[in-house]
Length: 231
Ligand code: SAH
Image (tube, rainbow, N blue to C red; front, side):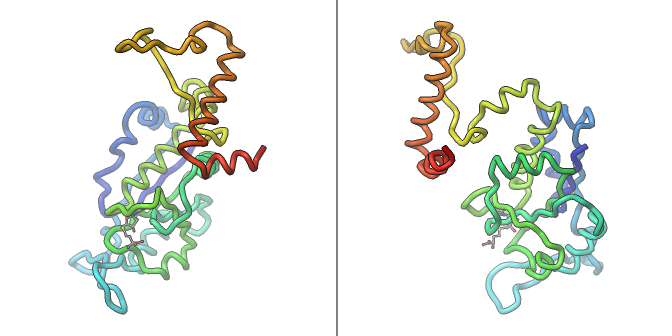
């Protein structure tokens, strides 16, 4: 079973969207588990202080390394095989490849930052792997952690009905997905393209491949270049 632990100042935000739909049902079925821990429970003083002003000056507050280390050591002792991830805009980009790698593993311990971030020493001492969900700054790591967990848990065995819907998707073959259609056959004067409905499976596969390539080329030149290099 894929076991997720999240360390956060806002455990009440979980499971949130992770409790809904297919991955929520998968959690109910015991295909994965989620435990959110309040970082503040590991504070030493009576004010439950978890942060302090940045050494050397600057705005905001930094999460204290000693308290975070205590939480990590309690939740994920040294022999825990799970990767310890720190959600961070400086991290390696979260990609479908990385998500697939995580889904094949035993789970993840995820640390959510807040304020200005986290003392560098705990990142180094606990070998935290920094992971980013994109080139923009959120207020905290919680939504980023949910994104990572939602993308990962939907790939766990038994979670999605048909394996095909997963393999056909954007990024799985290095390309963006082709356009999808459903009933009604005509919408505001626009018909579903003939090739989609006329039953020629070979033609349809070719059309979808061509559409995927065209979309990727125009919208994501970076993915297109990588796809061409692979071929
Ligand atoms: N001062 C930091 C940003 C802190 S934002 C910097 O400039 O790098 C506060 C917290 O939100 C971070 O510690 C991180 O846990 C989370 N966060 C913000 N943006 C994120 C992103 N793009 N990906 C993952 N986590 C992010």
